Image 1: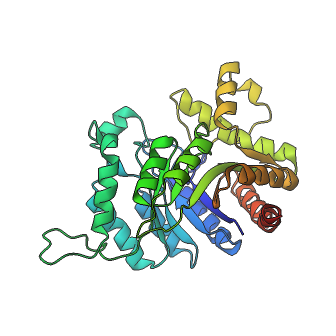
Image 2 (image 1 turned 180 degrees about the vertical axis):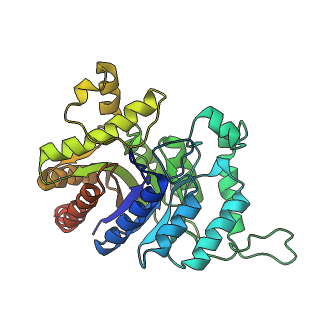
Length: 334
């Protein structure tokens, strides 16, 4: 049966704050655990008034403390923003506290604008050194050798699964080279999805971490009792996308009934292009959409992303998707 997981940006709602956003994330994770989702990932972004998960390792610990069995991790940590040793220590600490439940997904984008990247002390060519930083990070998790001068404590000798995440072909190549699981960000950047998956599978080298390729892909999914209500819920994410493109990011806004009053024709085309893999509708519509996505991509796991303003509606959306898992598995096996 194909696995379903959750990608959460811990949205800060208009009129609310980061504290409530993180409470909502932990509440969603608790529900996701009971509904059978495999993992719950939070993403690193900075200088975003609508995203509360900037201190990603801290947010992961908060969610892990409030759950029991679901895997919790990063989708992802933007590795060039950090020293690999510090990430090994942070995730070694999380693994020590919540053994067997922590994932470490790595990306190479800054997760922010250029000025904020400079404030993070991100050096100019950091992304170019991503493969070397991944290699260094993997080494910190290995058992220390005799007389090793610098060690990751906690971290060394711990089994923290490392994933490579990406929205282009480069991440697929890195994941294949190191023999690591791969996640593609098709929930917001679908252009290279199929090509990246092919490269990853064709070039994958078995490793001490993984003997066979394993790929997941993100899908923006908005499920409700009717197609019309799901499309309305989707408008919050559409507004967020447009506001970011306009250079005026905001907290997540309430849904609206007519997006044509909000965006220009050019902005509408941009959103529809970036979100063309989104699955929006009633349970039957969502089932058909996810079935088509799984059949086309052959992914091992689907990671559901849902930027929905109303927390109860967000819970309902994830509940609907969870209820479709068995029928989707049967269709895939047929």
